[in-house]
Length: 491
Ligand SMILES: *[C@@H]1O[C@H](CO)[C@@H](O)[C@H](O)[C@H]1NC(C)=O
Ligand SMILES: *[C@@H]1O[C@H](CO)[C@@H](O)[C@H](O)[C@H]1NC(C)=O
Ligand SMILES: *[C@@H]1O[C@H](CO)[C@@H](O)[C@H](O)[C@H]1NC(C)=O
Ligand SMILES: *[C@@H]1O[C@H](CO)[C@@H](O)[C@H](O)[C@H]1NC(C)=O
Image (cartoon, rainbow, N blue to C red):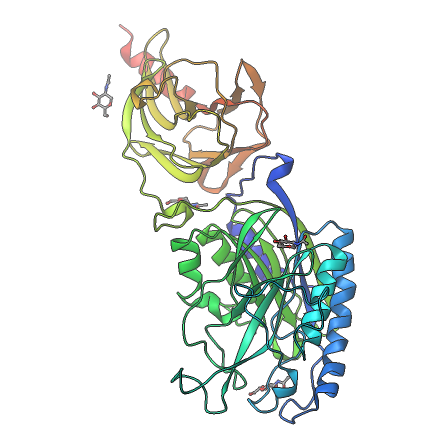
């Protein structure tokens, strides 16, 4: 039986799920396979190459089956776990027969499947390349790599004249080796060397643009993860791992989820299944949603997860992750004679708050790029409306500003081209909140969902609108306050 308790709690904490604009071309299908690795029972004892290959073929056989299943479900990319072909607990000497020399794809264009004779001793590379090619998908796997070096030219070269790296390899859907990443942050791995320099490895796909690569323990360190995301603007990552769960803070899916959410990135995380070692927990995480698997029981063989996920555009490289942009200062503007406090929406997506006194409205949004940049603002108003009637309001409103200047926000317009997916919410003192969504050309739309959450918070969500957004509003009416104000004002 699966144990979802922890994971459900993590997901439950993320109520602010918003979604992407539903245009077909912005989605792709990602797959990760949590593989129950078949281990070498005596990893300390050196094997001949032939025996090592026989051992690895048992795992590769399972990979091939899963690659075919993923392809049947339309996967564009499939990620396999760290250590899932060869296993772990080798010594520097005993891993020798498992090593292949992975050429640098920045220097050599090579499809091992199409051209197997070009480099010798590359059976595993060939097997993986053929899986990618046969199934027409990008394939990510982890294997041990041997790179000869010379102490004459490289003082860091190990005494035996070779580096041994824990390595991720990526093949394109025609079998070409397109990326090679050497794990930077080893976790007590006697068989491997730490790469002498940080490298930031990415590869580009036709279906979703650029992906970055890192491995397991790397997720807890600045290099290469933070540089990839924050300085290079990478927002999609493939992540082979062999992670031992550790509660309360570092279960695999728990931290995968946190990383994806907080960095605003998609993380395709494939973990090994090894119940005896506490290894399980894989998933397909976007900043908004997660499809994941955590099963610490002995019985199960493995699990293929497949999910349609949105393409994330690269961040503008400004040194900030997604939700950490400096908010614009609030300003006031009148909307329907009321003095709203507003903040402008900036960028393609974000998370902002507008408060009128202690009444605050929150917005999570993601928007399309219309032909012309349109200005939007989030506004809050808490007070007595006194023109053309007297009534007490608590209003959260996302509005398209009619002009290009913030002074226009709150003014009338019927037209908009920008598609916005959003969640809008506020904490209301009244239980009477009317949610509305208005599209361009007076198209009436409605929320996908709305309702109360704890603490008096009322929310609505909408995604996939096909007309530009003119207004989204939570219109709270505080009936009880108008009557007392009216009677106080009455002569
Ligand atoms: C690997 O070594 C650790 C201790 O160093 C041990 O706890 C674990 O059982 C070993 N795993 C395997 C698969 O041999
Ligand atoms: C194979 O894939 C790579 C990477 O996507 C691409 O650059 C190359 O043109 C492809 N080769 C062929 C023959 O399609
Ligand atoms: C609107 O509110 C701001 C800040 O509370 C205030 O400075 C301004 O005078 C108000 N304007 C009107 C028209 O009430
Ligand atoms: C949005 O910002 C608020 C306040 O800064 C924060 O509590 C919340 O977690 C943020 N949500 C997201 C999805 O970034």
